[in-house]
Image (cartoon, rainbow, N blue to C red):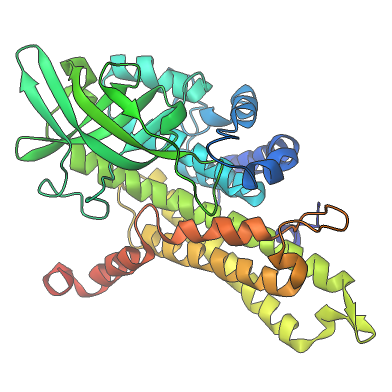
Length: 406
């Protein structure tokens, strides 16, 4: 169900460059046409039977959406402020589908952005097809026993030097896009340090597990990935440099947090818009439900918080565009604030819709709840790309210093 967008009346963007605002307008129109009609199907599907939303992915590729973050040398748009534009694009995708925005985030920000550290040959082989959408990218750092802690002692995936290259062995978990990925940029221990390798998923010894079943983000497929004696060459070592893996992973995850913050804002805005529309039309005791001061005050607070959340991720993205690969504390603030807000407003939306908020589908006429998927999808934002507890620790470290916080 289409509802009026309240952001057009309440939010006045005085920070984002003109090119970013143009990208927002363009991606909004594409999302309204391409994503919105399929959003309910994706949100209500089953990862193992309905699978990856290939039709939507291909449509976004046709529209050139995956070119937004990248330079012209690899077929990108060559924007002056690519991070700001990418974040705005993610918000517009997430407004309709958290799953689609997450696919975009992993494909472009995680797998795509880290490839910018690759050699010219690696960028032409892998990054150019990412920008065109010819191949789906994935990014693998997390393991069954290593997620937040990506130190060399924690990472158990190992690449061992051989006479003519490398032998990769290990096990990764929660790897988004992996069931359909053409390559996976993989963090592995090489001696006492960490390095990254671009692993072609068609290589012998690469095995993608069964997709996980999740409460939300069902169109964002995740699965385990195992590597058994996978033979790699020096041409597969990201950038051709050993020992740079942790730095590349951390800078990419920082960018990813900005994207997740933007997705949180997109979901929060969607939930807010549904609440405003529903409570303005729904009557109880002879007047609109929105006439009750409780809802008026709550919506006033939420409108303010959405504006703050959008400003935070925009500032973090602009700092990234200015050349700071670790735009803290804004990136951590944006991620923690925006994702927490999306959960809070999704819960508000379920409450505002009452029974229809809690139901997936009415038996009487088959009508679907417009907000239950938001409730399911929003929670993961507080967990992935670094839990919100970790984000608060990063912020505290900026305040108190490493000598106190560790």
